[in-house]
Image (cartoon, rainbow, N blue to C red):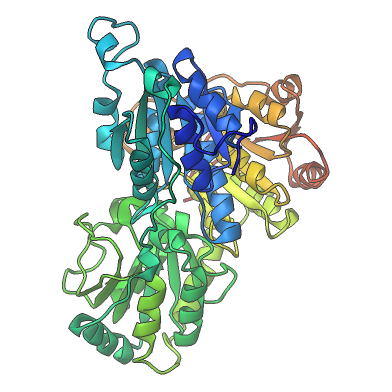
Length: 553
């Protein structure tokens, strides 16, 4: 590989070698906001063939990087880590939220930051603090670049970000290292060990086979690790062969086509959904945990079954969360463990009392469109009906997310993107932008509350500048609805949750997009259909009114 200037891929500077290693790993996009301390890194990324995208906030840049990663992983089965760039001081501090999200949501992210040289930091304090000390609790590793070891450092950073449960890795780059010459050669990346390659064996596997073979009411729950291992096809085939109904976490939606009779949809946040799902686990004689990480789940899923319950857990990384017990733990990738487990059981029917069909019917009725013809459920059902099946949806945090995660059906993994562990606001729009950037042929709809959109409003300008035709559906209720519900549930006064309305359609038009108010399903369907043909983004501001989520989830 050669750079634009025609020099060797490693370049002649430290920044050049860092950029070359990222390109070698498959990175083609980087996001962030520049500062004087990272100019050499930006130039090196560009010269190495990694496009740099200017954003309005570092958090948005990290979520765009995640959106790219999801899109590439869905299309190719594997993907390079995302790349986020921030300057020293406030740039690093601004990015803490998205780095913590990558840590909790199992997202591989290389976070490049600029810093002053160590000797200079002893006497120069303007914007200077210890980046590594700030970030160490929320990254898998933190490195400070040093001359002579840049290649080894980047090899470790990339492998650590991708191996096991993926996550963020921080690389602090002093200015003199970035701009200084290096004689290091560009060596091949070391080969990682994929969790999907680990296979079960021994007495624990045999005991698990016996338990599963004898079961009449097996049930499975799959989560983010199964998604990251690319285990969707193996899970769907296993469930269909052995008549095993499947619940997923919200991030695991699509591991089996959610229209399948065995699919029980997503779980994690909705007490009304839990009321139909948890009794099935209590009645089961074999509970299968397939790459399930309960970091995505709320309190109802802490100790959802007795510690001696018939539970088989498949996990390639040790589980130290303490959220539940398991009788048998297979330290294995999901797909090979399911192949081995299925060898002990003949294809047969299960749950012959009709409990699974009844639960699916109850869930469908629970989250049906509002009978009066308008409301948030009507919005989500209408858009799912009118948008193509391959559409990727993203959801921000808030009341709307709980409801749309129950209603929106996807047939493929990563068909719905959200922050399901950290549950942070202002993630949906940049997630959708990254997805669209990496996979422009696939429609994208962003579901966001009005408060979440206002938190990251500047990224509408980024959306304009990147010319990405994304559909932004904003639920307008002029309230932090989920928090307001909790206030009322606790008989607390209404404090700090309601706010005045914003003219979102006017804002969209002022920021280079199409905007329209929506008050009924007919208008929504017409505008969404028209948006599919636009070459710019469309913002559909759906006025649902305050307390529209009461009794919905």
